[in-house]
Length: 537
Image 1 (cartoon, rainbow, N blue to C red):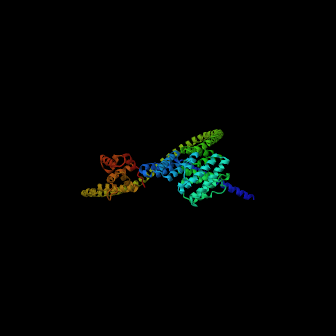
Image 2 (spheres, one colour):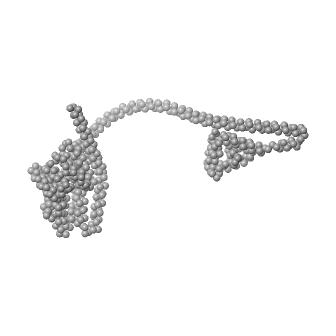
């Protein structure tokens, strides 16, 4: 049994949370629509402007256009609707059309009822000859009379007179029902209204729900249905449903630019009595603005009687909130001071740590710099070792070859001189081809250099435009220009030394260097640095 009770309580709590969430959602949607109010009104203004423009374009359709303008203004602005209702009546009188005259009076009576002018409403209703009305207007007439008496009953709020007014209102609804097609929107809406006026709101709003679920109706008609349906949710347990229904009705009123609306007023009252003061104050202000804009005197009086009470409660709530805020502020300030003292002590310790970390960081940076320098030096040393190893071997081989060759040549010349063969000795000396030997020396130098720096030619040419690039002719590996910069890459930067090795004048070497650098795509400094940075393998 206890378990069932716990489960039941849990289900009720879950439903309550869900209902509250749905209520918050629809109120949020309503606030969002309030922010778009001017946009919806602008759409109505465009329609009204087009209708007014058509008055000059289609003078023969004046009666129809006046009726359309009245319909646009009927729930939007009383004064303007009253002007076009009178124009409609005046034009009908000039045309001496009894049907149109009576239809115009029905429209004006309906408008006066919206504005809370009960006496004037009944004055117009007395002058209407219902025998001249078509079925639709006759239906509107009976609904209007029912609405006039039911509103009068609410306004008087007197047990004796209100009962009589409600009975008349129900009778006129029965007359309206007799003119409706069964299951039509008008039939269902009138049946639902009859339930509300007769006080039969303990049953579900079947007719109104049927309309919302199955009938395609305008935003304005949706608002009317939803506002009337709120009368079925007056019980405490139905409070959330009533809030949702009234909020949805207010949304439909905003979307249809309806200023003669009851939904926001009822919504504000319900939220106020349930303790939601901020939303109550917001919506009562919206209701006041709409009533003032429309010109509903009775509604304005009703709102002005409620607004001060809501405002007072809002101010009291704000004052209590300020007191709570002051207490929170005091305790938070006290806690903040304690935290600040602790943080200050931590800050002092952190500063000391940071100073030590800075020293360590500086030392690490110095070590990193030294490491980078050592790595660069080590790389250079490895490169120098490679160059020296290969070129030393190369020079030992070359010099050994030349020594052997000279020794053979020396012995041959000595023998020929000792035997007196001087001409043959001179001929042997002439066999030594210095030019050929120098070219052989250069070829050997080229082979060794390219084997150490295989990317040298590509790197150097990357700094020249395609038409200025230097490529040796086959079978050469290097030409004179490339050898000059090859010697520079090996560390021989003295122009005189380069000229001596290549057997050119200093001026010629200088001209070669300057001519190539002048054609380079980079500066002279970048050119030299790039040449010196060519990697050895």
